Figure 1 (tube, rainbow, N blue to C red):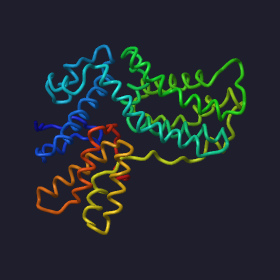
Figure 2 (figure 1 turned 30 degrees about the vertical axis):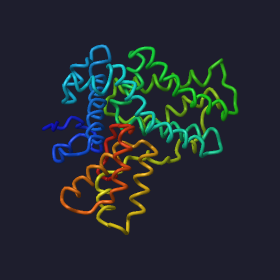
Figure 3 (figure 1 turned 60 degrees about the horizontal axis):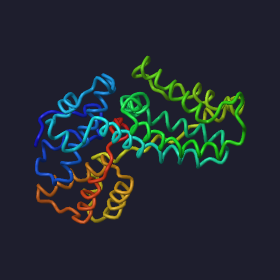
Length: 308
């Protein structure tokens, strides 16, 4: 099936608009594209209308797929939301934990992890709102998925924080308070970056344990979260031919290991286009990218043109 309109309008590194130009992509790629469209449409629909008001019919219509196609891909609305949450977590959690574990000082580690968390939430506020506010409404399985994800973070914090909290406040209470403040900001100040509240939120997070963070802890820059590889980078590597083969293979292998759907999608589209034009492509790498798409996650990150 070929669609004539983009659905994932706010995610230019998403999997939304290229199939119309290349309708003969292999099934792994078209299956991924359909799944990505449904998941992203569900996130947009739930963010705008709430979980209870969003319906399978409205999600399918927004995704540009039939009701049957939806149920061929997902069993229920709850399944889609859990998949979306897993996709966001698969992207975010390694970066948050890496930021936390890199720094030896626990105050700095906590501040860096929080800064990374806010930067990732700023990538897409619809996804942030759905994961933090709407997921519990999706049912017991969704809440269990959330709790399973939170536990490693709580355990890492408990192991590293060397100062007992006051007034019976625990790490889990602080995290719940942070998420409540984030949701309030998303609801009442839409479009405003969460990172702008980094100072306030860092002070809130550390105050029960340390009486407030050191100034240097708040002010230190943290790395921008890694984004999936865009088509410009992939095309550049392919244009360089054998000279860039090793770099291209490493890019694909890394994307497969991370289950990085957007990168693998762009690789598959770029190589399909070259193949259709009669240009040589590294077929083993093409097969690896396609196989990786079978289990790849999709997270609708907007890409600033300056980062492409």
